[in-house]
Length: 415
Image (cartoon, rainbow, N blue to C red):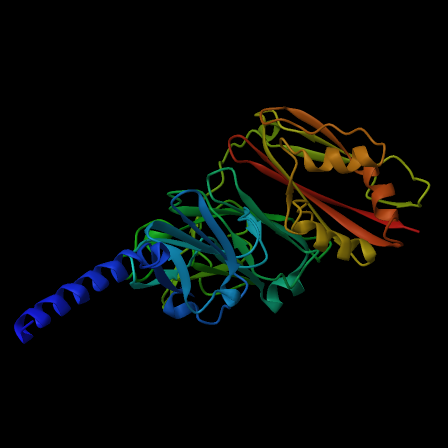
């Protein structure tokens, strides 16, 4: 056999072996790829930490895997196909929270033998609202109630019960262009009249804007509201009726920091002039059976708030501040949905009836449009007594369908 024929046979054998090697290549190597995933925030939000963010990867054939951002493998082997990854702050996005809530998602494809690099940018979904009171304001008024409405059946409230409120993170309705602010304050001076004012802050009225932003408030925006007395921005209008927040020198300044920028600008406050002939009966009212009570674990005196709204109820927000163990309990329950610290909505509520029911107490909640509701605060006695002695101030903000508000508070001391 000559050398040429031997060489030809050798090539044939080598080719056959190569084909067999390819045919025997593991199927997993043909159908797998690698993913390198990074969870990040916008550049201006690097102060937040993503380590505990929940990460969910979904793919073909009902594939699903969960991690935290800190436990993501440096490289993750996945079957080929189309995938979606979602990352977010732990927990559930709620209307009112005490922290920023971030969320983001991305789609990607895993290809055989290829490493796919994907980054999920999580954007903030709620806005930050910071209320600040100047010394002139707190020196002038002994009690106050400030409410902020987004026009989509969502209301924040601030009272004298907390003169140094922490920032609130608010998930507002879609296409919200302005916030309406209502202020009611009672001066310390015995001969001074209470003041009342209503105003609005519209995003498009900001002294400056930036390219690409819209006229709507959105997640990541920061609103800072400063209340003082006798400031330079107090309107000087001789036709403003007496005994209003405007005429008595109440001053409010608002600043906006645009989402994902570090630019802060002023938003002018537009004061609304009161109706010169208001119909008093159209405004909601709150009447307490007593201004303050003392109770024990075994019970106490009757205590209820009778709430009336001729135009129908839209919102009843209840807040509580305690100097006893009940405060810590309320803080723990915020995450569970009982928002007594930030403001718990009674209209259509199912949380309080459930809690009271566990204590053997039957309680019914109001429905939107109701014209009268009796809120039995005595139902809280047994609940509060579980956490020991202390004084708790309950504050109520009532809003009717046209937007009129009424406020009131009552003290409960558990002995």
